[in-house]
Length: 203
Ligand code: VGL
Ligand code: ZN
Image (cartoon, rainbow, N blue to C red; front, side, top):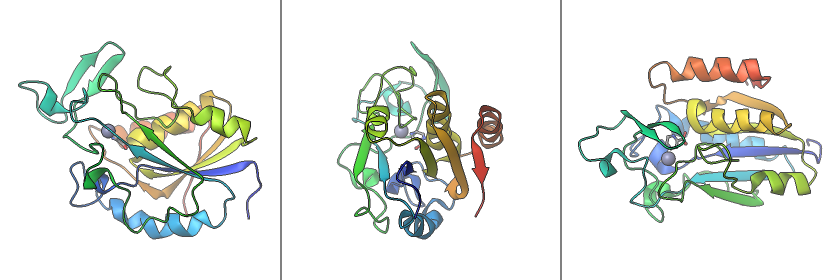
């Protein structure tokens, strides 16, 4: 069993990011058994869910003439326009049916404001509007985080980089993550995490 100061953060293991989903990550569901097993090592487990209203600004469908996977400019910077995904209350937004949820003490939902996307479990894409996760971890005395889930190059990487910025010790189990890899985003995210001091682990 890991120390009481450690937590496992399971990012966005939702149907829409798994094969058959609206924003499917190749092999996304293959990490579920390994994540389930890893939960037994941690005294604190947090799950996150991407959780968007239908009119969300990150959806290409809400930008007339725009195609999915294009980029637009938002007040907070460039924003990839995604296929409509993880709409609040839909089956695509549900956690994968085989993912264990009983060991989790907290489920954080993010991206629920129509006008701003949220990749990170800590902050929305303006990098300053908090989700509340930092306060939860701090007040519970947690200082070391292990990240797993989907997608390596977006929500996992943004979360891990914010965690470093906030002063946590951070590992990413790469074997228990899968990436979208849009225009080389996977290699870029790995390099950014490595440079920031994230420990990149494999099985
Ligand atoms: C994600 C793109 C859009 C993710 C969420 O979970 O990595 N990626 N929304
Ligand atoms: Zn999203």
